[in-house]
Amino acid sequence: MVPSRFVFDVSPLVASCQFTVGSRSVAEIALAGADVQIPPAVYTEVVIRGGARPDALTAARLIQTGYIQMVDTTVIGSPLEDLQHYQLGQGESEALTLTAHLGAGTVMVTDDFLALIIAHRLGVSCQLFLDFVIGRAARGELPLIEAQQIVHAVSPRYPVGFVPHSLTMLRRLQP
Image (cartoon, rainbow, N blue to C red; front, top):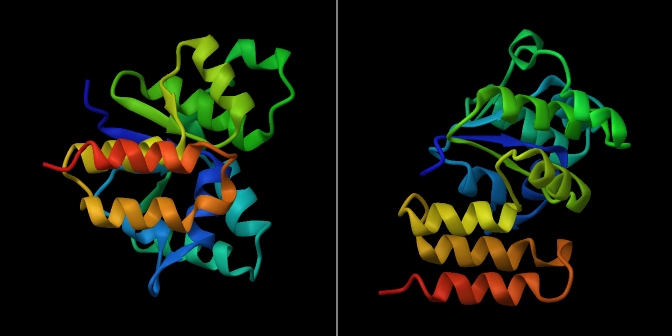
């Protein structure tokens, strides 16, 4: 099933707003045309607590211009009961709950490995930011060259192996 909606957690939103390709933020390039939503806790952690940091200002601009939609707390509902067993931040908890609530066709995007594992255990569709970029390129929603530039730009954020593997996956998409 092709994802129709993405719920971003704090980590990929901050990272994609911190790094640039040329003069544009990675977020501006990677999120263009995608249905990206964030819960209020992610907004609070990234924009409010971020204050005057450049990544917080970039995220605020992307929300104001409609690249990212902030979801009302009433849409999220009560936290998933199983989350009580983990020590997740509010952003991860709300993102997991929102993704589960929105259901089929919704994918959570995170770079928090604990959140990724918990999502898998809960049966919530979840992927790393690098896989979000690769998926958009594979579906023709993001030019391959821009996807490669994004992967290079965010490379300092990832452990050894993730960036070379992602670039290999993108090369396999070339005709």
